[in-house]
Length: 513
Image 1 (cartoon, one colour):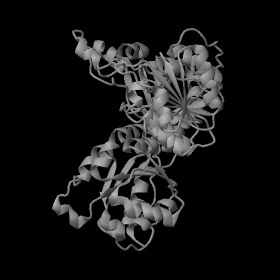
Image 2 (cartoon, one colour):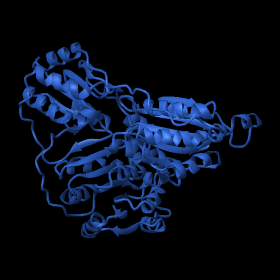
Image 3 (cartoon, one colour):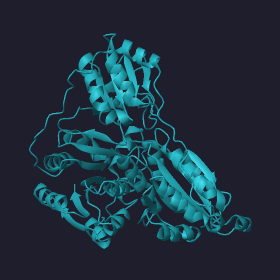
Image 4 (cartoon, rainbow, N blue to C red):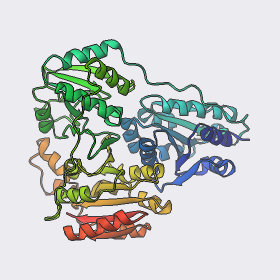
């Protein structure tokens, strides 16, 4: 048995069932080992950003890591943007990155690079295997590191000779960290804030946005009058009719400041203190009011749900009925717009669907208009690195083939990882993608004004337009084996949406805005 086979057997033995791969020469022994061992499904992506984004989507829905397989430093670099998103989502991911044989490095071959240096800013754990006999043990350590709360990106670098040299066999998974208990003092402090009679916000992230955390937060809110607000962007939110409603902190700074205005106590519950995405002239970076007291009820790596249970017990709120989201039956129709499309989707969304949203300028419409749809999961871009939507939907569909995935996708960012459509076709994944085709980087037009660059002229604005030539999304999708249709009216969108939701494979709708 060689090092590569010992690693594949270690991955399989630890419950890693999927490898999202874009391999090269240095990884051929690992690829061959996948045939010999079995038990690890290999999903090919035509760009490394597809592989890393799909690993993120898989982890968010499977609650365990997949692995990636990437080719040397340049291949890893191609996947870094979506590893950044995965790290911000706190998704467990195990990267396997091939490298030159150890004795070949001194010759400075064309693909030679500092792979560890490339990996470190986007990983929580990095290690290079020394030889074939250490590979399995190193792989087991990588899995344990990825699974440590709240979920981490672990990168194992596999030199070619460590891959092909002899190994002793697979390694067992070492003990995995568990979520730390929240200190009683944190519960007491939160209790005092909630009983103070002052304006209090439970600021939610991570497990607090899934059952049973959200129900507990809803009971506490109903008992005390505290508001529930989620982070602006979240890895996964369980929402829809019958669930506890929670608003998202708006992305624009002025709107976020207005939302939190008058808050006396902000209780961080699986979330970090809210800050602006960017610096803007004459606007604050911190979004909570200056006089607001910020308390950490539970840090992201701590046992968020247990903290909510303890807080509910202290407040005698365990039996308090939470407010539930009503079924909002607003009739769709009208002219084509994100609002109209969101209403149409809300009326048609299958129960237990997975909604992947990288709608950007269209995001507020979908976030608000779909909140009363049938129960569903809502996955967002977490790190701000665009191009996550199609890969995220791909990974979610691999993790949960029993559920319909709907990807709400801005057109400009979709071009970053359009190759994910090919993977969806190859794997027959049940993903319906709605491309919000406004033929521009519309969000940048708004940011141009937000940062005060008001003197921009024709050259600046031309860099934000995608209309010379216009992208033909139907042809792009069909060229990668995905059925597609265009909609320029709401009547056409209704027909296309029905076709996409009835399809059991990938389907793309070009919604012309």
